[in-house]
Image (cartoon, rainbow, N blue to C red; front, side, top):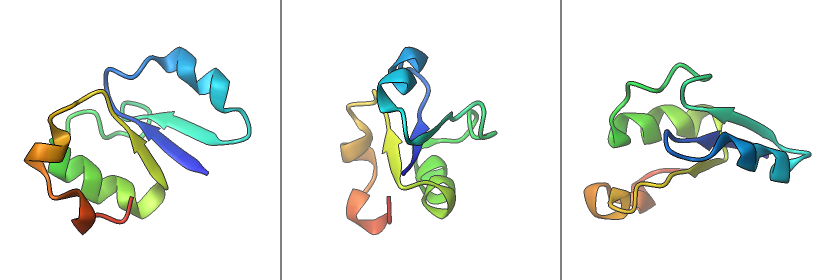
Length: 67
């Protein structure tokens, strides 16, 4: 599984996800993207987005994204 960590997600968590490809938004060149832009960009290359932003579900219509 390809997993993208949004900013704020502890990088140490990646060690708990061995067997999966984990990249941070910074590593993927997506650190300056807004939530909507990040979701659109991430759905092309990742299966899961992990975020600490509890408001993302109110800011974006998540069913519109394939991630």
